[in-house]
Length: 592
Ligand SMILES: [Zn+2]
Image 1: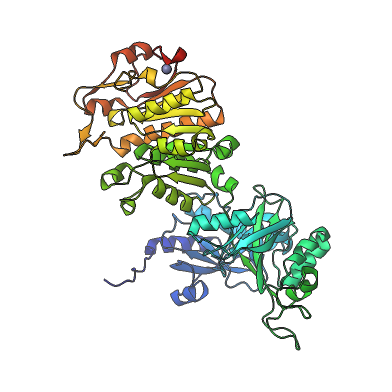
Image 2: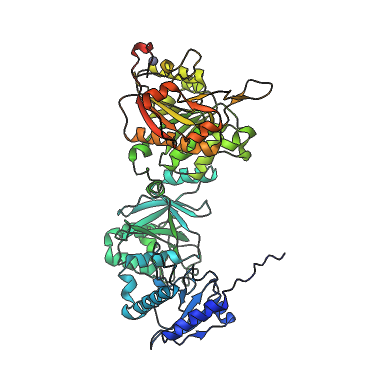
């Protein structure tokens, strides 16, 4: 086997059909040879192409890839001499004709081709060079088109204010954030680097008049001097201390989608003027000492370079808006304590972070074993490590915006040493499934004024149901819902045989269930937590998720008679139930 993949081709009849269509449209198609295609479109996956006469002034190329017509044709502009808006040309010399989310018909490839060609005509004839300057998205497209340099990742809040920002080059990309602390923390979490180097940069504010192309640092300087003199102190500050180069962010406030960020590196000239030793920066100042307004003419000189770089947003709003719940500030700011980092707890931690939660503490005294990993968020590489610490480490690295602590000990130890870990939380969630532990926690909550919302979550055998008991201060407890052995009295399901299995030679047991059945149950628990954080309820509640009937019958389970009497016969697909958890005065009366 050689490493080369076989060259894929299009069937001859497909090519004949496209060529006939181009001929019938009087475009005089001329077949392009393979070596021509490779020379003119080296970056493209093009397997066939024709040069066509679009009109008196323009010839363009119709290019087909191996997956045509599932992937539409590209319009290549290699033969064009005249200036066309650069923002409309991809790096590989093809035209940008479709918006990102615009589909094309998969039923009629000839109509798609006609449409692409008419868009090409409109672009080339109807609109002149000022087309791009009038359209903010064009600017953004062009500025992000460069792939010459390492990209910028921005964690700056996106707003209109021009301001000082900070950057670090300690990662494989340049990280820019609003404060020195933000940048340091993010770099530390992402890379375990202990002492990141952080430097000064600026975020400038502009609008869609911002030029599509800038040739050097002086052009940038003069544009702001003319359009935004109020930002000149900021612009000049970039030159302070004579940096060799510095990144700059430019916010386009009126771009589509609520603003866009452009990024560039400004690099001082390679060679200084005669009599000015290279690398010494501003004449008359010791290295690194020149103030911005004095150094600016040297830094932003006509010989300086501007290098566009791609900016990727990683600010919290951008990350969690995609998760759907993150725009809710109650979720984003909530302090969540998770007691138990097993199968349920580890998935909850990740789901909550993906939904926008950004402040978690994980508590668990156990080490990860091979027996855990089929139902745990952590895999084999973490076996033998603290579940809490290893899980926190992966989340910190995957979501560097999140603040996450880990205690490798029972919650009782944490609580005795530092009660604030629990008491200062907005919600404490226990998923240990250890009856004695959880009743002890429930008792502690009752005995303590202003204990936060306390939530117990567990799965019934085989993940046939999920239960979430949410207790608010003084309004019910877990003890009243259990018999004297700590068995919950209000289960939904009943089982004929044993539902636990035991490891040989020791007292460790587990409840068998498949992660596939458990995933919707886990998601339900996460949903209840998010709802509670978004709108804190006054009364205590018991939420229940009942899985489909086949999960019960496969393992010899039935619905408990008392539960059906209250809730009725559920649909075979299962359902969701919410019950009041009645107050137990002085914790003596049975609840629910
Ligand atoms: Zn009680």
